[in-house]
Image (cartoon, rainbow, N blue to C red; front, side, top):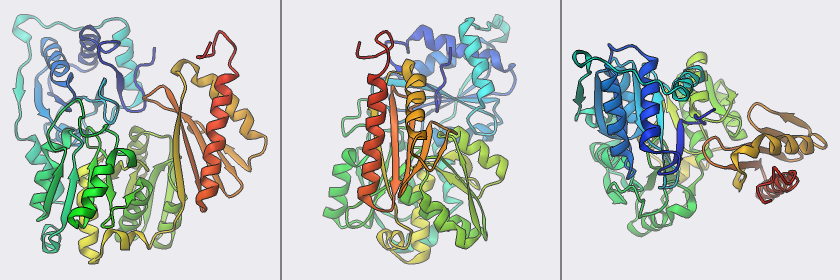
Length: 462
């Protein structure tokens, strides 16, 4: 059975994600590497994360592994620390942006990247056979806390930007930590950059009382209001595990993630004198248009940070990321990193002597509409087959690298099953907002029609 989705295992706590299940996952991970080099364990701020982390840590230690507990930190901070501990693996208890009832497990390789699919399959096989290595009393591993990880991570980011030039600007920033793991590091980072920081939801709370964890426009109403009210230069928001950052400009406008991706892709390629940018099939056409004059080219991948980071590593890309605010700076680390993204935007603005709205106005403009529609996971393949047949009839071109992407008059439409939730995601892009919306509505209708057309024994509505 496949348990790993786009970004690790994610399940509802108390349903599939239980103490016995996490014990089996930990045992399977333990069986994948021999004792010797340490395993780093970190977790996010969800209500169940500390308890599940202790199950993970104890099971690994009882399997003979030396475990370094770095504690409650953003996912990219844990990834940053894995190679710096010369660890065999890293394990993170997190469900990223999912609702509070979810939690999950991410496994990180010794290089700080998500492990490849073959390694995940080995873990899944171990879970299936309940592999749980047990060391003799003399071979039990140590559990070693490391309280310095957050500071080491912040220092690593500071080394990648011009702290003096940023500090000279004395930016006023409204920072929305979303009651997530960024509360542990991002306020400290921005203060070290000389910013005046107005914090929202900067207390870790796994129930996410401020707003739901995904940094969408609907969830960031308070941030947009506060940026305008306090006269801030910009607003920054993270998701629950802080591997993403989204922005609000000085006027209070929510900046879609594809605009930040395009802005920083152009800046990275221009500073490198050319190079490759890697982004998933959901990436905006604006990226290609923005980087081509500077000698840049785009390589597209399946959706999900593992696909992007591994392709970046292979291609020696100068930049990469997704349109959801998950951006990757390879000189820092090959991982989506929300805090690094925040620092990079401030660095760009300091170098340019401009505001965020001003630099964004220079970019090619497209409208990218994102929607979603419920579809139980067990029906994804059947629905995908039906929408593919429908789109092949009148599209200029159809690709199936990830889901179904069709080029139609004036734009493109992408329909793909989520790798983390029981739904289909719909992306549509065009120059004209009305055309992008029309394409998205067509995509929603196609998925709903495909679900309704399932035989009674398959239909989720039966």
